[in-house]
Image 1 (tube, one colour):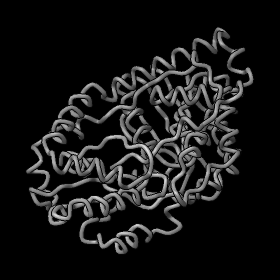
Image 2: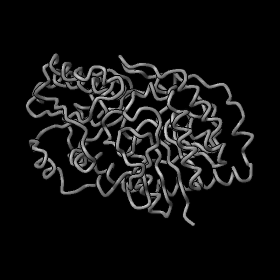
Image 3: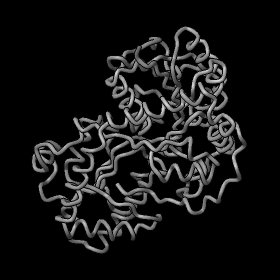
Image 4: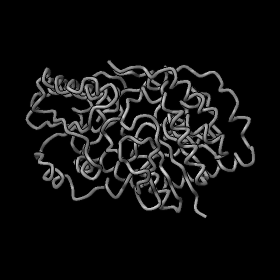
Length: 398
C-alpha cells in the first residue's frame, strides 16, 4: 500500500505564484517535493487555508497530489502577523479532515502549520516531520534596515516544535547547526535534506544568445539579476545601492548595464510598494534597473540561462557587492565558469533525490513513534540556546 502523506501549509497556498504576497521558495519546495514523492509512489494531500470564496474543496495539482482548502478564518489572504490567531481554527479543520482518511505521516512547513500539526499528531498518533524553512532567531540576528524583528510568539513556537516534532528536516547543515545551537534541537532527530532543482526547467538550453534574443536584451549587456519577493529582508535596496557604487567605480559600464528586479512586494515591502522605484530615481538608475512582476518558472529560466550567477557577500555594505559585480563585469570568463560549475552541480540535485531522502526521514519518524525510541528526547525541555550573534547573515546578492 502506498504511503499517504498530509503536507501542511497554514499561511500560503501551494497554488499561488511564487514571488507574490507571502508566496516564495517554500511554495516551490512543497509543490516540487509533493510531485517527486508521488513519482516515488506516495499519495500526497496538501492542506492549506481557504483564501477565497468559491475555491473548490479539493484541487488536483498533479497525479497523486491534491490541494485541500480548509475553512479557517476569513476566506481571503491575511498578513502573516494575523495568522497565529487562526491556528486553532486551522487545527480544528485539519482534525476533521484527518478523521476521514488515514495518513501515515504529517509534514508541516513553517512554524504556523507546525503548531497545528503538533496537535493533530498527538490526537491522531501520527508522526510529525517539520521543516522550519526560516528561523526567527537567525533572521533577528541580521535584520535589514526598516524590517521588523520576528515576534516572540514565533520564537516560542519554533522552540516548542524543535522539542516536540518526531523529526526535523533542515535544508542545510548550517540550518541544522542553528536548530541545535539556538533552539536545543537534538542532532539525532534532525535530518539534512537538500532541496532539489527542477532540471527539466533550469538547465543549459540553447545558450545565452538565444535567451537574450527572447528577452530583448543586448548581446553585450552585463545583467545582474534579482529574483525574489520585494521586502527589506531580501535586500533589493542593497543591490540598487551596489549598482550605483559600481557605476561610480566604472562609469563606462553604464551603456551596457541592465538590472532586472523580478518579484512583487511582500511582508514589510507591501507597506511602501513604491520605495524601490523611488530609490532608483534618487540614484538616477531608472534607465538601468527594470522592475518586473513575479515570473513563472519556465520564463524565469531564461533569465538564469543568461549566465548571471552570484556569490555570498557578508554584510549590507553596497561597496562590497559592487566589488564582486565589478569582478564579473571585467572578467566574463570567470562568471561563465561559475555558470558551468553551477549547472554541473544542479544535475546532482534533482527533486527525486530530495524525495527519497525525505521518505527516509518519514520512515525514521514512523519507526521511532511506533517503538517509542527517542520519545524521552522528543519531549525533553530544550537546553539553553546559544547566542545568535554568530548566525548573522547578509542579503544574498542577486
